[in-house]
Image 1 (cartoon, rainbow, N blue to C red):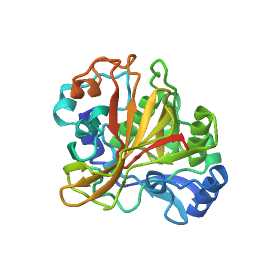
Image 2 (tube, rainbow, N blue to C red; image 1 turned 30 degrees about the horizontal axis):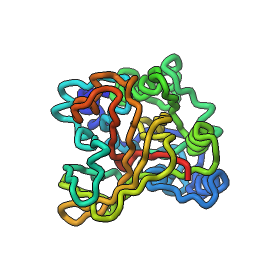
Image 3 (cartoon, one colour; image 1 turned 60 degrees about the vertical axis):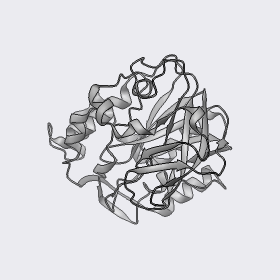
Image 4 (cartoon, rainbow, N blue to C red; image 1 turned 90 degrees about the vertical axis):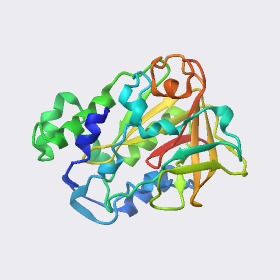
Length: 305
């Protein structure tokens, strides 16, 4: 997603028609507990549960629409190198050292009070999510063709349809059930956990964060599923697998005292990534080098317990 699209997203109306179904947070919690008993639900997922009995309408969080540059096959543009806020989130694994590394980061921003929610699993399966069915999708949600909303929805679908690079599997999940199913099937077990970055303030400014003297803790094995939320009329998470990765919990403290329990994912096999990918440009390394990045608040990593 390029910067001109980001400017379009910034002017989206906050409310779009979504579904005639009634969904409740209790049903999603029940589904989660039945699928993953004794497993805490991370904030990045909790944020996308319905806030109560909702019928007919939901809000679009326009502030989530940032360029994550999550597609390994994409080259970085000059605008991204100058302006992309995610530049600061890339780090080399050797710099994940307590008490030494300082980075300019912004983990959270002011958000709309009501966000998009997951669809019920059965309903999500019935709604088309394809470029070939885009006219039907617009009609279903009463979106005007060639409108700004339509452009954003089309871009998200296109990103979900892009081919995977060698060694990657990808899927866009529109329900909590489908996200769990994809993650458990790719990790080969139900003994998994979902982890996201957690910050002790709802809103923070961009500031210098330092890795605290608490230990940097490795979590899971060297296999993971990473999911990023995408701008759409209902919640969609773009999930992709990596079989050569290390995930860490990293304790950070900001200049104003903000505390963040951040998650960092280090990709150890980047040989098939685009040589001009943003990560290589920022870290000044070549394909094949280990690339790490912190997860923002709207991202989740699934790993073995």
